[in-house]
Every structure is written in structure tokens, then in C-alpha cells.
Figure 1: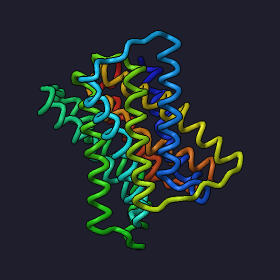
Figure 2: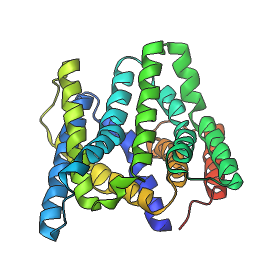
Figure 3: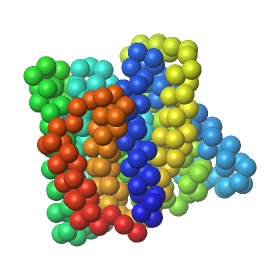
Figure 4: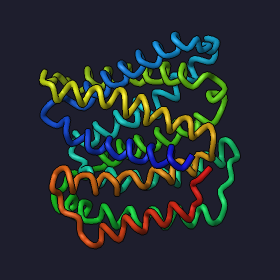
Length: 286
């Protein structure tokens, strides 16, 4: 279980890197729509090969809603907010609210309780994450781009992800996970393509790097990463999975340091260590 948790954090962190790499190559929602569609096709093929059962038609709306929330609206609204001028650092700052929202929603909807140590670990982890992203946030505030519209879109994105995560703990969890992932990715692709039409996106530079990024997104990010997240949500508390994902932005900062030669301050390194400590205290384990 620990290895799967580490793999989830590693894969989730590469999503931030991919977001940087597609700039100038593929418009965000075109990328997301194609990524989700390819992932859906892969899961449906896998379901046919393995002979997995499909849920009754009455259960499809909940599966569709889960996919729309956790994939389509979450990433779609986040990308729109950034496209409207919200800096990535501010998006990460708002994203730090996700574990709190998941814990609250899980308690209200599925009566899932969190220990005192879990709450303490969550708060420490969020504090560490704030230290990591503080230089970017400071720079963002000095350059503007933060408005009521962009903040609303970002909060809506995090709320959609939180609701989608909690929904995975409900009756949706009774369906075969491979079939569920196929349905949810297909629903998310529809949301992304609607946003393509609304925003008038059209950029797709046809070169090998564009296709490699698309394959990585479909196979690794959606095919493995989101699958692992949903699988863990079915096995452990939703709040524990949400706290675990606090490690992704700091790890992405480390990856950016090596891939893009971005600087890392001593404060950010301390923040990464504090985040790891907070996640450890929250006891995210099997």
C-alpha cells in the first residue's frame, strides 16, 4: 500500500510538469478532452478483454457525475482560471484547501470521521505546502491576475474535485473500477470538449512532443494516476488520500528544479520537509 501511495504522489506531481510543457503546443482543454477520451477507450478495451461487468443503466448517472466532477470540472475550471490570468501559484494555494474540504464533506455526506492526529497532520502539511509555494504566490500578487472571477473558478475547481472524491466512496464504489474509469473519463472528455467550444480553443501543434505528452496524460496520468486515486478512495478514508496529495506540489517544485532549472529557496526545502512530516503524522498508510 505504501508503494502505491508513493506512486500516486509521483504521478500526480507530473501533472504540474505536463501543464507547463503543453504551453504553446496544445490548448489546455483540447489536451484534456483528448486525454480523457483516449483513457476512456483504453479502459473500455481493458474491460472487454477482462470480461468485466457493466453497471445497470440506472447507475450510470452517478458514474457520469463522478467523472464530470473529479476530472472534467476540476481540471477544466482550473485551466480556465489560469487562462483568465490566475497565476499557478495562487491555484496551488487554493488547492491547499482540498484536504479540509474533503474531510468536511466526507464527514457530512458519508459520516467519515478523522482523528485528532489526522487533523494536526493535515494542518502541518498545509503549512508546509504554503512555505513551498510562498515565493510563487508573492510574485503572483505583485503581477496581478487575481480577480473575483478567477478566484471563483479556482474555488469551484477544488470544490468539484472534493465532491468527486467523496462521491467515489458512495454507491459508485460498488461498480467494477475499470468500467467506472471508462465511463468517468468519457464523461470528463465531454466537459472538456464543451469548454473547447466555449473558449474557442484550436491550438494543436502536430509534432512528436505533443503526441508524447498526450500519451503520458492518457496512459500515466489518467490511466494509472487517477485509477490509483479512485482505488485508494475505495480502500481508505477520503481525507487520508486528500492529505497524501499535499505532497504533489512540493515534489513538482523539486522536479521543476531539475527539469527547468528553476530555483528552490531554503524556505521551500524546509516547507517540503514540513509537508512530509505533516503527511506522516496524519498516518496515511495501509
